[in-house]
Amino acid sequence: MSAFWDWALVAYRAPGVSEACLELQDGAGQNVPLLLWAGWTAATGRALDDDTIEAACDAARAWESIAVLPLRSVRRTLKKPIPDIGDAGREALRDQVKAVELAAERHLMADLEALIEAVPGAPRPTVEALVAVARVWSRVVPRQALTTLAERLPA
Image 1 (cartoon, rainbow, N blue to C red):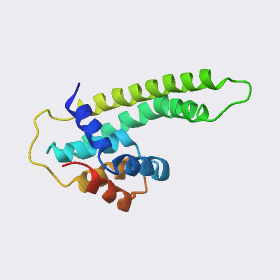
Image 2: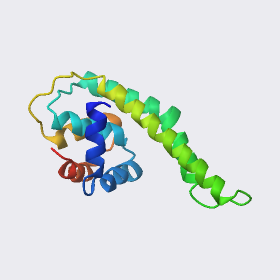
Image 3: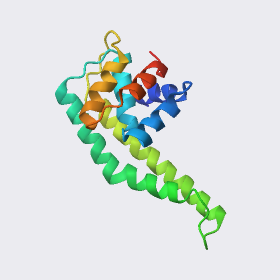
Image 4: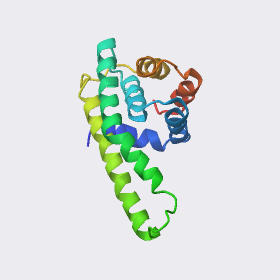
């Protein structure tokens, strides 16, 4: 296990975090592992400079376009009954696709963790890290939703 992965598992289970993340993903086009990474760097005092944020967004875009989005699309398609496909087989396959989607996100998270210094420092404001990453990720920065997420992430 990695320090970031361990932190992300706890953070995602905190009250309201998963809902805030999914709203940012589905409503604002943000990348959840990237936002969790920004939150983790802030909570653990790891410095983010412009080059590191750009490299993180590049890695997230690559993983998202090649693996995560196609897998998510298949998983969501398999969620509803499909004519001529049995429910048991469809649901079993959906579970397998979900596991592969999670594995792809975990590989992205390992790549993100490798971009920064291993030595933590003093915690920094979470919302600032989230906004800095979101600003490079997309043209629109969903500041209110990011503030909500920052308030819910563990320090």
